[in-house]
Image 1 (tube, rainbow, N blue to C red):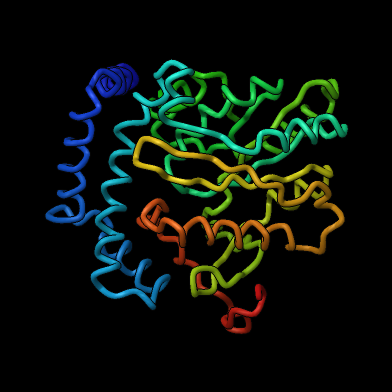
Image 2 (image 1 turned 180 degrees about the horizontal axis):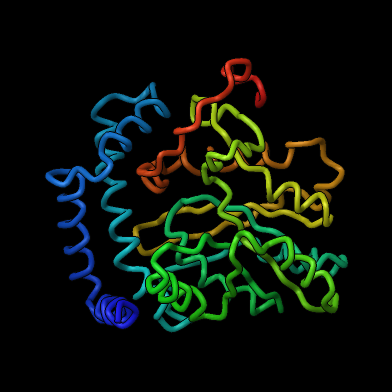
Length: 305
């Protein structure tokens, strides 16, 4: 029953004209940052500590834009991912740097990892398969299953509509082993949204100075890349407007197993911060990213220069 309700709701969003979606999202965003105050304290606290150099007016503008962007992303994703591929490529999503994957495949490295953050419309990245199809590579995304199984099912259907595949995060190691046993002609890349907060189990990969404060990061992608000698690419997201983005692929390392420990994660952190600073409103500020506090001995930002 819940599954059908979610399906009907997503189908309704797909049928709404862009003008109606825009007006609806602005109205909901005004409620969230106003009377409802959805995580408003979290958003403003995160922004103040990340950008101490900005004035109150500047932070207000970023927060205002953030809520508009967040709501529009949620409401528009079903419609965006239901567009014909030629419309997506022409109006909504351009991917630059695909030659990196073709080059790696030609060099005998058909399996790679892509690191990205909660920047722009990360749901739209599912449409990246239409670009990977052109060079014979299958795109796959890691995801954290939702507690609401019906909503999880609907979202997975939406993400796979254009051919992208999905794998639960706790199965990535097993999945990589399966892929490495495939024919070297079978190109494959797996995308990690790698800016999530480590869990409360204490499994922090490293502490780094990120957006002016000590920040806990996971290093699972780095460890997998080094263990299986997989090239790693970063996707920089550029927003042109709330329904048009460019994903710029940048090779972080073709040989991560040769790098010092945590060097790859540091490279990712640097690139992610540049993406966020260029367009702050596009990041997920409502997330309690700094709920973990560093050990006293690591409280000074000394790990990344």
